[in-house]
Length: 133
Image 1 (cartoon, one colour):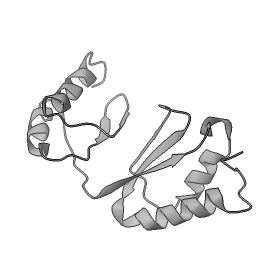
Image 2 (tube, helix red, strand yellow):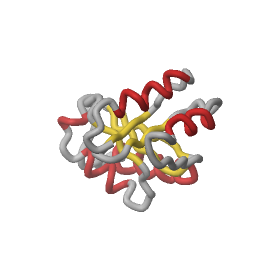
Image 3 (cartoon, helix red, strand yellow):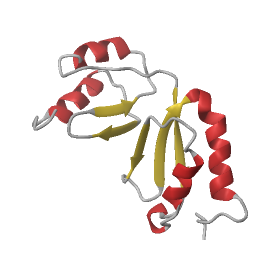
């Protein structure tokens, strides 16, 4: 992918061909990580994508979304989110598509624990960085 013009277009075309929406995506110079909910054509998608590079599938993952008005204006919110989840293995983080949403991918077995930790950190009475003003 490094310096590969049109790489992402080709990746997206595979998902389009199988009418499979992408829920969450992060990229770097050498990798693309994404999530899908509809796995009906997963085998075909993997076959087609394999010509572009090495593939890994991590099943049993959950997307947590932290939503609030203008999260980017509350400077301590990110600190509080990551502090609350410091004991949870994070697989992927996506922020920037909107100032109102942070999406975090975690193993599904940690979902309830993560939700409780986020609630405690972000919505307790004495929260250091209130999201709602």
